[in-house]
Image 1 (cartoon, rainbow, N blue to C red):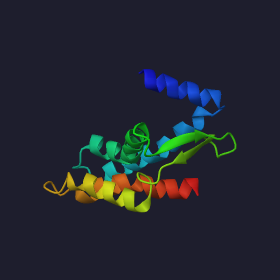
Image 2: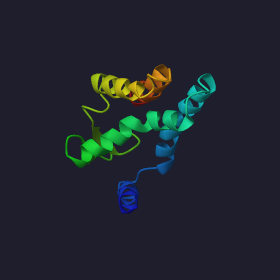
Image 3: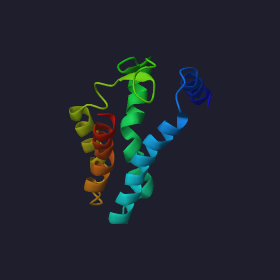
Image 4: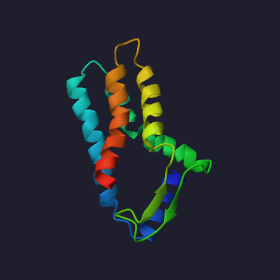
Length: 129
C-alpha cells in the first residue's frame, strides 16, 4: 500500500494526469474481455493477469535496477522516460508471452494466454509510437 501511495504522489508531483494512466490500462484490460469472449473456457483471471504481466515484470526489474523510470515533464503524457529494454522489448515480450502461454499447454489454452500477454506489447507499440 505504501508503494502505491508513493507512486501516486510521484505522479502528482510531476503533474501527470491520472486519467491518461486509466485510459492506458483500460485498453489492455478491454482486450482481456475480448479474449474472454472468444475463449470462454479460459479463466478470465489468467487473461486479465496476462495483459498486465509485462508491467508486473517491469516493476520487479525496476526494483532491481535493471529497468526504471526517470522524470521528464516533456516526455509524453506520463511525464516520465521509461527504460524497459527487457520487459517491453520484442524479444523480451515474446519470451515472457511464450512462458505465460506454456501455463496453458495441458488445457489447450496456450494461444489465448500467449495472445493476452503479447497483446500488451502490440498495444504499446501502437499507442506509444
